[in-house]
Image 1 (tube, rainbow, N blue to C red):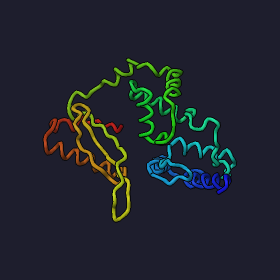
Image 2 (image 1 turned 180 degrees about the horizontal axis):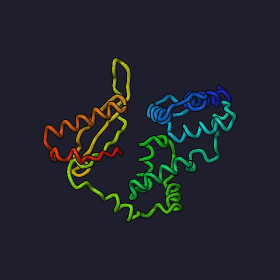
Image 3 (image 1 turned 30 degrees about the vertical axis):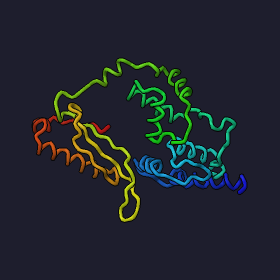
Image 4 (image 1 turned 90 degrees about the horizontal axis):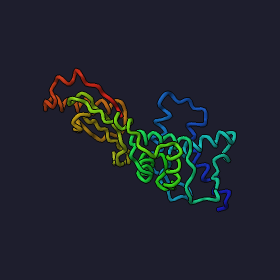
Length: 241
């Protein structure tokens, strides 16, 4: 296969991933984010690559490059760099994600930050991000030192059980349903005061209905066991993470 054919195959694969975002299809509120999350959670046979996943930053970059090229497929051709195999410069979206992670967990060091970025699919598993590049960015933004005031704010804890619950969703394993592999999602609810996991369950989607089902089961469990007392329900404040 010629180099031109290889480039076209890669560009065609990339266009298949971004087509919904660049072909004039109207996406209602929240649909774009849902599509992006779905695409970065999948595994692919990527042409001429050993990687199996696509990062959010790659998707956003391809969308921009396709538009810059006047909506021509050539804009998605791979651009081989002289420093191939070395760490890439940090994109604007990646820099923002790093800032947010440092705000949430100020004591994270560069290697742990890179693991978090890969876990959140912000960079691909096989993408190289040199810790020294990351450290230079953290230093330039004065993010290498822990902001003691910010940490103190995060020490807040609800005074009573069931006063505040928090929730989170994480990607689970693929499961076989009727012979087909489907993605699972773990929805969990935790009590802020006691750190008790009120309820956690795997679902086949992260819809509002599934979240409400998880919340409903958590409330039923507390009501049955009497943990914290019924009084707490009227004071409950719920914060999704």
